[in-house]
Image 1: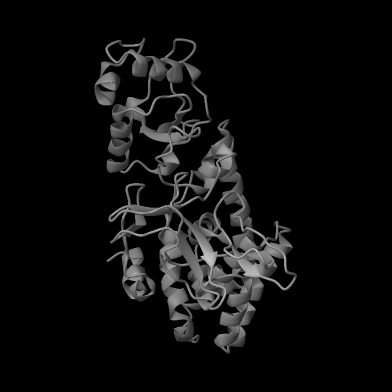
Image 2: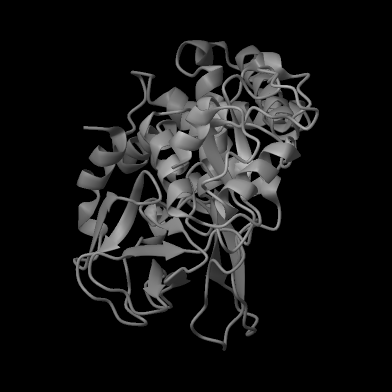
Amino acid sequence: MSPIEEFIRQNSAFLDPGIVVAQSSFGGYGIKASKSLGEGDVVLRVPLYKVLDIHTLLHLRNQLHNHDTLDVAKKVLQAVLRFDFDISETMIIWCHICALVILRNDPGVDLSPVQWVVDYLDVLLSNEILDVNDLLSDSTDALVYEVVRIKANIRMLYEQLLEIHPPAAGVISIEDAFQLFHAVRFRVLEIPCETETGKSATAERPDIGEGAEVTDNNDDFETNVSLVPRLDFANHSFDYNAAFDVDRKSKDVIPRVVTPVDKDEEITICYCPLTDDMAFLMLQTEISKDFDKVAQWLRIPLEIIFETASDGSTRVDQRQTGCGSEIIDALELKTTESIVKCIKATLDKGVPYAESLMLKNYYEAKLNILRAFLSNPKSNCGCKSPNVLKTLQ
């Protein structure tokens, strides 16, 4: 049983009887309705004490009654401060998560009071992330360069941590630190928290948009950057049918249905307006269905990449392509069954996301060939490889 499946099994009691966590058509897992749900129905409840933000993490630390726990968390944060990294709520959450990974391998620390958080660490460590080879630091691909840059920063933080707390070397690797950094960035939400000023507000997640709604307009809300286990199984869609809310009495985080949901339909929320392609690519690791709404990026293996470059050559720079394949921008391309089949075939082959790294419109000629093929599938569209067309067909 995978860490994600085990976490689902152990936390199934918190799910509404009307929903199940199952394989998603978006990739990975998602939340699906096991019965019809009407507008306003609550999808699931996440108790406030199980929402991981700065406040609850501090409370969890105090729960352990262990000075080493506080000390390790401080050391991770100290490494960040020493490096003069951008200190945000997300970074502070990441520091605490890294500290918990270190502590759970310390036999002298009893983490049983926060076992549910320990279980969640396995979910974060198994989250699919965007990664690249460190040797691509001189790549002309903007996305590759950005990932390498962030990874280099995390490596410097990690090295600072080992100087401050040498025992960490044996229990958390640089790969773990980078994995957790991306997993936390991808999963954090801004959850509304009621204040006493009497104004109304709607919560948004940074890089998200219409992610949250507040039901009562008589009070003011501020937002806390938070990890919300179980809610983060809800996938992104621009045609979202649910939005997260907060129960005024219990303070539980409660996604509500905003449009009626049929039985077996997946429940989705809107994570990102996608105004920044780079930000989306850095965080989103699954293929979205919203091809016709925004410029989306498709994972396509190298063997079906068109061979005709703008200068007529067939040379492909493996270093620049991220060692394997390219992302082709689907902007202005028709969403056809052949393209969907192509994407599914790519995913079935297990082509790593790290191998799909090309700057948008890098090979404009290839995009033109693809557009021409979609307009006239019977034409070879100037493509020199018949296998390419056969694959697409």
